[in-house]
Every structure is written in structure tokens, then in C-alpha cells.
Length: 263
Image (tube, rainbow, N blue to C red; front, side, top):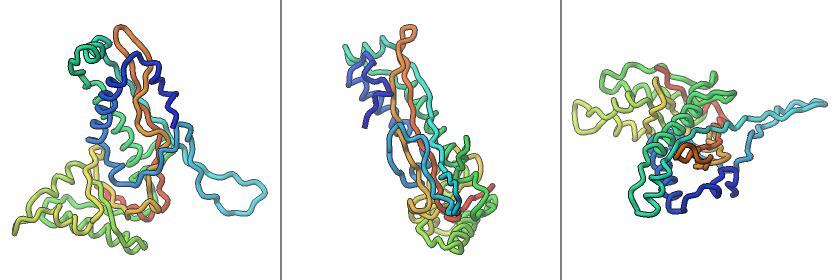
């Protein structure tokens, strides 16, 4: 797949430096991303994917326009010192990758925000106005979390989605699951993992609630045009400017397979 639009061949650095830069980006992004752990990935289909064709409405008319889902391009930049790169390439002095990691973490947050909250004409998992939902209790008492999640499972079951399921929660809600039950050595997370068998994940982009989903790409997925990649912009005042970019969109085929957890 061509990556000429990233300008990497114009950068005055070696493959060894590109390897360090790419590895730092991937490692930092993976530490944040939750949407990709929750949903199936389709693609990457290439930088040119600007819109995803949706199913035709089905009405017989003389003039039909097929609906499309826009595929947003997410983009951020970072700087590296030209002298630091030279020191690494010539003397092997370890390169400071903090700016790369910061930029990758920022872009990963933008990605998860799009997947969970939506924006720019795209519905996220929690911004849809249709589909089942559960108002969460405060989870102060033992067993309250399992009771709420079971409500979500029941709602999905009644909608015809019988599992398996995956779950994403705010860091606060997730961390509450690490408590031990008063009797025994089992945590609430252990208990929930027997109900939500395809994974329970912490989503740092969420401030409230979470989402419970019937697993399967036939229900919802992430469609990727260009996967997260580093590009070269050019030299600037003794530094080199780079970009990190990606294009993707959450595609919810069946909104009733997504149970929003509110509160």
C-alpha cells in the first residue's frame, strides 16, 4: 500500500530512526486505545477512503442517492531535534521520544473520542439516540455493578442479541470492579468476566458510564482508511517536524446491539 502522501522518503533520516519513531508511536497509542479492543477492525483500505457507502434506502424512485458515512482524517504534529537524531544515528545515543509519545497519545484520545462520542457528522457508540440503555447506580455497594450490567445483558437479550458481549467503562467504574467481594477472594471484575466473556476494558476517554456491546463485526466495527502513521513535514529552526495521522470511522450496523450505560 502506497504511503507517498506521508513524505517519509523526503526525510533526511535513516530507517533505523524511522523504526524508533514508529515503535514509540505504536507503544504509546496502544496504552490508551480502547475502541479497537472493543470493536472489530476492518481495513485499512487506504488513504483515499473518504466515505463509506451505506445500504441503499430501498425505496423505488426515479432519483436515488446512496447514503454514505464520512471517514474523518485525524491529524496531529510533533517536533524532534535534528541534533538528537544525528546523535542517535552516528553515536547510538538514545533518542528522546517523549514528543512522539505525547502526540500518539493525543491522537489515540481523538480516535477513542470519535468512536465513543462521535462528532463531525459521525455517530459514536454513546451518542446514538436509539437502542437500549441502562441508568447506572453508584456501585458503592457490593454486587451493584453486576446488577447493572445484568440489566444491560437482559436488554440486549430481549433485543435478540444473545452474546457474547464486550464492555467498556470509565476508569473510575472499571477500578471499582477490582474490589473483593466481602465473602471470598473473588473480585467484582472476576464475577463480571463470567457474564461479559469477550472482554472488559478501561476507556480513559470516557467521563461517565460506558457501553455494553454484542460482539461481532456484523453489529459494529471500526472501518480504517489509513492506519495510524508517522509522516515527515520538514525542517524548522533546528528541528524536524513530523505528523501522525489516520482515517477511520465507527460503523454501527445494528444500533440495538449497543447498550449505552449512562451515569
